[in-house]
Image 1: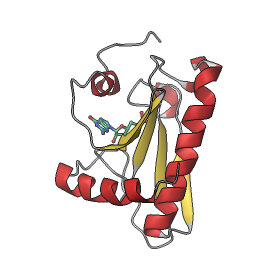
Image 2: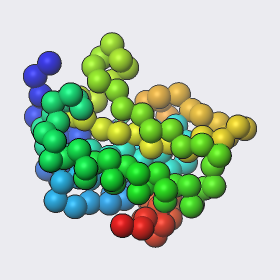
Image 3: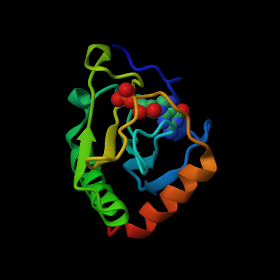
Length: 140
Ligand code: 5GP
């Protein structure tokens, strides 16, 4: 599948669409998922145009995994879940719906509601409130 420069994450990277940022450096951007499956659901994307992980240049591997790990640890600190799910889908048949590579970081605990994928849009104030806590907890 060819990379579509008008996908929503490409627009976020070009500042043509809003997002609630959690972390940013020269290689990656992390921001709140607008339809969180649990509070604090964060996405990490490379600043590189690729639909999926299979075509990501090696120089982005360390930054994207390091950021994903650091945010997972921050989510652990903030919410104290018993589990943290890190999910990354490649291709429509794998369930991918936005075709710019991204890692999901989602807290999981028994009894904590795990919402449907891409279902309920959260308002930006609530996302900002969660992002503030995660930003504070990131130890990079
Ligand atoms: P995928 O199914 O491709 O692995 O996940 C795409 C994710 O992007 C979903 O969890 C969905 O909620 C999220 N998403 C879709 N559109 C937007 C958007 O405009 N902004 C943000 N922040 N997240 C989005």
